[in-house]
Image (cartoon, rainbow, N blue to C red; front, side, top):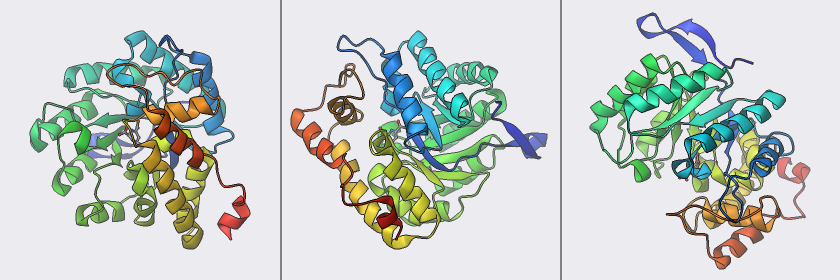
Length: 322
Ligand SMILES: O=C(O)C1=N[C@H](C(=O)O)C[C@H](O)C1
């Protein structure tokens, strides 16, 4: 299925794509073997489970959680192929991370991804490390929007990129016809965040990207989340979004508090080291191995998170929804 439907005329005669960005998107880890080779079968299993058993709305390939920065070009293609196949099989949208600070290279990557017809949107961080300023960041996204051929989700994560975005710049980005959403991970729920969350719409989706505070982000209007923590307890993160969307505030608050403890434990060491440790402890990936400069998480962190990664037996879905 070609995910890009161009629905209304936008800026400069360009059309606004409808990318269906709501609910839970799981940014999958990239499983490795003990000797650090890609483990494609394990990835295919994770992708299928997230969409079938886990009830995720869609997947993110090549996010930060996927260790995209240390994958080879061939491995990146393999990861996208595997995630595309799972999304196609489940009729689910696929978002692909395109994280570079080289505008021209990002345009080339977007064009290649667009050719497949399998990609609903690209998740693009503000250019990391260079700190081009807000005008440079806007120029970067304008070039990607005009020449990349894919809907874009702006990834606002200043603690990783070193570049903040003001409300004015976010509004300018939103006005680009190809920009269909923002993954909001500024670490703050302040006046600017509240204004942005209040303006989340179908054609410009605000998706929460700070796992530990996803519950308040959803309460304030986020249409969903891209959450590394949802590699474990996928169904519970999907349920949390459903609860907030159906105004079931009591159960949503309780489940949100419980999952915040899990997310804090999963992020006790650099992402995705603890998540991989937990998935390995659960027998879901062949190894907890990560590539340098990441180091495997300590047994203590993995043990603490693994303990929270099992949903309490007493809480059935009916109880949560009551
Ligand atoms: O890979 C992602 O997408 C995410 N990465 C973030 C990070 O590692 O900073 C966390 C978020 O949950 C999703």
